[in-house]
Amino acid sequence: MMQPEDELSSGRDNEDGDGLARSPLRQPLAESHQKKSDKDASVFAEPWMEDMLHPQAAHNSGTAQPLTNHVSEDQSVWDEPGLSPALAGETPPDGVTWYRWYMKKVDASSGLYSWLTTLVVVLTSGVFAVVATFAAQTIFVSALIAITVVGPTTEEIMKIALTLWVVEKRPWLYRNGVQILLCALASGAAFSAVENVLYLNIYVPNPPPGLAEWRWTVCVLLHSGCSTISGIGAWKIWQQFQQQRRAPALTDGAGWIVAAIVIHGTYNGAVTVMELSGFGF
Image: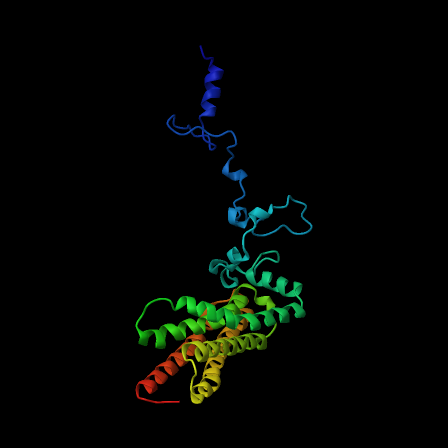
């Protein structure tokens, strides 16, 4: 037989934290159950505010988080619109933001390394654009669309691709807009040179002097000029994120890149009409 005190003890075990009797149909309480009053109700106790996103201060001797728990700075909660200074006040001094991470990278990199990166982009972006363009233009479309839409779009995007990648993923490797414009201009000039060599030696063997002169003047100016226009767009992207202290956004310079594509496509269309009209070099 259960003694009265045992019955009383059993009744206590089936009570909620507020003293009310628990239903026998409810799930039993776990041994580690705590009253709500014992929990930290602060927003800083939420999982997304743990130390793996916001490292502990230097004076805090708590356990360091393993590297496998590191979350990319692109996913920092302090860059979310709901935690913007206008809504949530100023970001805490130890809060991880994309722009603070960027500034640390700027301080850690040297000017020499920055210009070496610029040189690598200058030397490789044009050749990369040629290879990528040939790969992309294997899609079968009508000749007119290929000449006026697919070709210009592919070429202008590929010529600026490496420069844009550095602006978006390694922006601290550029120290000023001149480096960005130099990379864009060099990419267009190198692309034009490789294209001319292929065109005048493979596509059109023994070309007339007028065609060769046209390609080494007008075509070089076209490719270099359009790439420089796209480079202005990349510069705008790089400039805007620093002024607004946020991650880079392609929309800040997309208009310039689209303008370069339109100019290139218009040129291709005009040359095609001239050729069909019997214009000769």
